[in-house]
Image 1 (cartoon, rainbow, N blue to C red):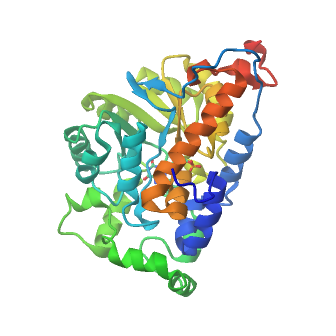
Image 2 (cartoon, protein in one colour; image 1 turned 30 degrees about the vertical axis):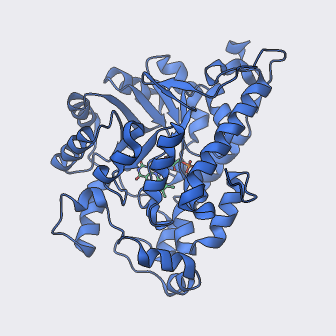
Amino acid sequence: MPSKGIFTTRQMEDIARRRLPRAVFDFIQGGAGSELAIARNLSRLQGIALLPQALRDCSAASAEVTLFGRRYAAPFGVAPMGFADLVRPGTDRALARAAKQWNVPYTLSTAATTSIEAISPIAQDNLWFQLYPGSDEAMAASLMERALKAGVTTLLVTVDIPVPGKRVRDRVNGLAIPLRPSLRTVLDVARHPAWLARAALGERLGMANFTASKGGMSGLAHAEFVSRQLSCPGLDWARIAAIRAIWPHHMVIKGILNPQDAVRAAELGADGIVVSNHGGRQLDPAPSSIEVLPAIRAACGDALTLILDSGVRNGDDIARALASGADFVLLGRAFLYAVAAMGTEDGPSAIIDILREELLNTLIHLGCATPADLNRSFLWPQPADAR
Ligand SMILES: Cc1cc2nc3c(=O)[nH]c(=O)nc-3n(C[C@H](O)[C@H](O)[C@H](O)COP(=O)(O)O)c2cc1C
């Protein structure tokens, strides 16, 4: 694995900042409002200390886990990300390829610039699909049908975008719908000729999962249609129940923070939830997902598989999340930083390798032979119920 002197996602983020036009980097790194949720995600995770248990045999330690009846090489996967190919053409495909190769899940976003049909032969049985139920029920049903045909078995239904988050950086840069890039953004893009050349040679970016069904629509009309489709203030539990009724495989509700909502998700027949504040990109005063995770686990016991995202940057963070009650973890931005820093060829494999190695190293230090061994007894200070 070529390291190119890069050993952490932190380094990748620093390189991404230099390599990408500012508007693109801001789109990835930025969040809603004052970006307090982003800071909170990082600080609350990093504030968790893990207490090692000495002299436990870890000679056969492995990062493998079972999730939804299937073995994965490690307890983490790629979170759904719309417009990932802004980083480089082919980003979705490259992440899907590496996920298949390393046997971790890859989640294709409804808002991806690559279609379900194009990605499914690459990710194969490692493909998850993320659905924005949106306002158009027929459109959601058709996306599910296509996902089913493509062999997807795990559907993530995102529920934390009732309206688009107020992303100040995107507004300042003019990276919003309709697209009106500021002069500063245009000049800055011109200062990144390598990115510009790749973008010019790559496929025209559009929401591929909608282009297929709205073929006649293009430009602004298309962007506006998609934007209306994605955010939906009218979304309610009845829509989720209707999705549950037609989706025959694992269904995971993404964007739950409230323990009562987690209980409701379990009652409705969800197999899991993603405890997430959307990486701080939606509701800025939201708690971090790691803060609410223990209360969610306490409220729903083992009735739900708990997947955590928002702020996870390295193997230690993955261990922190698992010790706090998560079964699995997703990462978003870190994967895009990897592609920006190391390219589509090396970046995706490098980051999976780094995260897996970091996690294994931490597990062994803690005295855990497998991720499933991590529990609240490894938290410090030790919670009263874990002593
Ligand atoms: C550029 C970008 C695009 C995203 N697009 C989507 C999306 O289309 N659907 C979705 O459910 N979440 C989306 N998310 C949120 C991620 O799935 C995930 O919840 C979040 O990135 C986790 O936080 P992290 O980036 O700190 O790891 C996006 C995140 C980023 C950074």
